[in-house]
Amino acid sequence: MSLALAILWAAVISLFAVGGAWYVRKYEKADALLALYVTLVVAGSIFAGKTLAFDFGFAEFFAPGAVLIFSVTFLLTDIVNEKWGKQEVYRMIALGFFAQLAFLVFSFLVLNAAGAPFFVNQAAFEAVFALMPRIALAGLVAFLISEFLDANLFQWFRNLTGGKHLWMRNAFSSLPAMAVDSAVFVTLAFWGVMPVFPLIIGLTVTKWLVGIVDVPFMYASRAIMRR
Image (cartoon, rainbow, N blue to C red; front, side, top):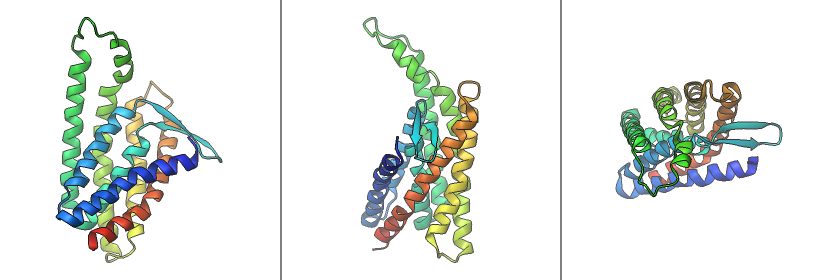
């Protein structure tokens, strides 16, 4: 995937966050952002099993397929943190954790259940979901660590700057949290299965790209919610 296409993908996904901000302005509730957040978190568990190649011109990176999707969750928590504070973000994290846990249990049950006599795609199904339990467990651990780190760093920078410089708390909370998430997730999910170090580098760099792309969407979301 080229740099331009990766930026386009990140922008399209981030536009859903702007739609969630419009919902907040209209109904004064975080329901849409919560729903999108949970959707991206669970989707990340599914798509992480495929490794993508990103050709950014100056270098080629490799990262799990969930990178462009899951990275936007940090934008969503920052939007909610800006509007309601970190306690509401903690509630989002709890809901996302519960959704991932439920998905892990359900996928395990379906994967190990006997198929119908006429179901001929069991091998393909197992090939896709073979790493799912390990990926989901790794995602749960990395998710809790990185999301709580992001929420607290965002609030810390907000207090430090007196509520000014939104770009600073958006970037300087998300970028370290993304790096921690990448290191923890890849190590737990792919150790002994894939080359871990290149995946950590690729995942971190690609997430940082999304984090930079998300900055104007953060400003747009805040402007919409304040109207």
